[in-house]
Every structure is written in structure tokens, then in C-alpha cells.
Length: 155
Ligand SMILES: *[C@@H]1O[C@H](CO)[C@@H](O)[C@H](O)[C@H]1NC(C)=O
Ligand SMILES: *[C@@H]1O[C@H](CO)[C@@H](O)[C@H](O)[C@H]1NC(C)=O
Ligand SMILES: *[C@@H]1O[C@H](CO)[C@@H](O)[C@H](O)[C@H]1NC(C)=O
Ligand SMILES: *[C@@H]1O[C@H](CO)[C@@H](O)[C@H](O)[C@H]1NC(C)=O
Ligand SMILES: *[C@@H]1O[C@H](CO)[C@@H](O)[C@H](O)[C@H]1NC(C)=O
Ligand SMILES: *[C@@H]1O[C@H](CO)[C@@H](O)[C@H](O)[C@H]1NC(C)=O
Image 1 (spheres, rainbow, N blue to C red):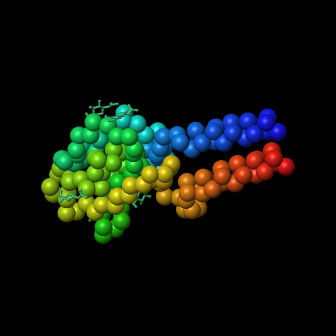
Image 2: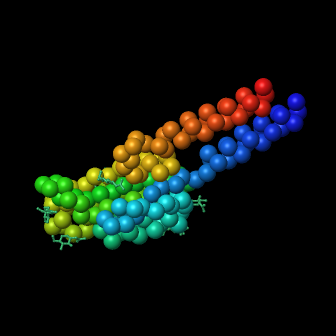
Image 3: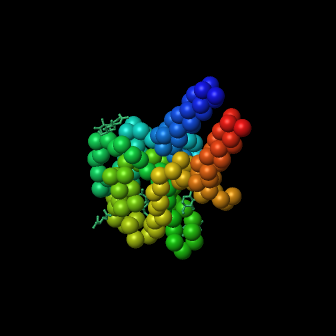
């Protein structure tokens, strides 16, 4: 019996550590790479990297020392009349970088570029998924598997 309890505790702790892992986001910096985004683990370094990229287009990106939590973002500029995308960016950002509230440096583009911008804070949440969002259900799935395992151990 005690072996089972210890095993169960270790199992729960292990899964807990997995869930407490830092945020992961999809990452890409232009239209071509955004057709096949890579994965990125959020840290001060990767969020700083995003700040650097954002500064190439915008003139009011705040300097953020560091963050304890991060957002996944998708910042896309497009022509409103024909929906053609001009610029697309996915990645980890500092919440205080205000990624959805930045001003374009080029004044003439401020009126012609329309913006679509989303922040979220669950793993891999910053990519459109036509088959429905997986990230939300991942925890439910892990939870169910864990419950099944525990039920089996104690049966
Ligand atoms: C991120 O950028 C801030 C501001 O420039 C800097 O103070 C900090 O050391 C950088 N952190 C990392 C991990 O690069
Ligand atoms: C990121 O920066 C914040 C604020 O400067 C700091 O508290 C935190 O420890 C840093 N995170 C890492 C992993 O270095
Ligand atoms: C969409 O419209 C913009 C501005 O009107 C134009 O510059 C661009 O070439 C158009 N793109 C496509 C794919 O038609
Ligand atoms: C967004 O930026 C505008 C002007 O730069 C400012 O007035 C507004 O308060 C900002 N909103 C947020 C949520 O920071
Ligand atoms: C802004 O608009 C001008 C003129 O439409 C264009 O040449 C330029 O490539 C655009 N993009 C940036 C990042 O300035
Ligand atoms: C990013 O957002 C734009 C605008 O909502 C969307 O068209 C595009 O598919 C998104 N990119 C990805 C990789 O999901």
C-alpha cells in the first residue's frame, strides 16, 4: 500500500512539474516563416528578442527589464481592402511591451496598414488552428490520463 501511495505522489509531482513549465509559443517573423512557425520557450531573452523585432517597425516599444510571466502574441498587419497580409509576427513578448498598442514608425503606413493583434497565455495559443484549439484541451487530457492511472494503481 505505501509503495502505491509513494508512487502516486511521485507521479502527481512529476506531472505537476511538467504543467508548471514555462510558457511556450509559436515563433516567426515574416509572412514566409509564419506559414511554418517554429516553437519558442518564453524567457527574458526570447521576449527581448521580440522587443528588438518590434522596434524595427514601431517607435514606442517600451524597454522592459524582465518579466516573470509572458504572453504569446500574433501581430499581423494587412491591407483591409483585399485582406493581403503585409507583416506577420508570432512569439513570446513581455506583457509590459504593450505589443498590441504600438505605433508604426512610418507615418504614411499608419493609415494604410490595418492591424490584427492577439495576446494569450497558454502554451502554443498564438496560432490559428482550424481543427480547434488543442492547448485548452491538453490539460484536460493530461488530467484524465492521470485520473485513470491513479484509479488503476489503487484498484
Ligand atoms: C533584456 O533587456 C533588458 C533591457 O534592455 C536588459 O536589461 C536585460 O538584461 C535583458 N535580459 C536578457 C536575458 O537578455
Ligand atoms: C527576468 O527578469 C526579471 C526582472 O528583471 C527577473 O525577476 C527574473 O528573474 C528574470 N528571469 C530569469 C529567468 O532570469
Ligand atoms: C492589396 O491592396 C493594397 C493597397 O490597396 C495593394 O498595395 C496590394 O498590392 C494589394 N494586394 C493584392 C494581393 O492584391
Ligand atoms: C495605448 O496607446 C495610447 C497612445 O499611445 C494610449 O493613450 C493608451 O492609453 C494606450 N493603451 C494602453 C492599454 O496602454
Ligand atoms: C511603409 O510604406 C511605404 C510606402 O507605402 C513602403 O515603401 C514601406 O515598405 C512600408 N513599410 C515600412 C516598414 O516602412
Ligand atoms: C495571425 O493572425 C492573423 C490575423 O488574425 C491570421 O490571419 C493568421 O493566420 C495568424 N497566424 C497564424 C500563424 O496563426
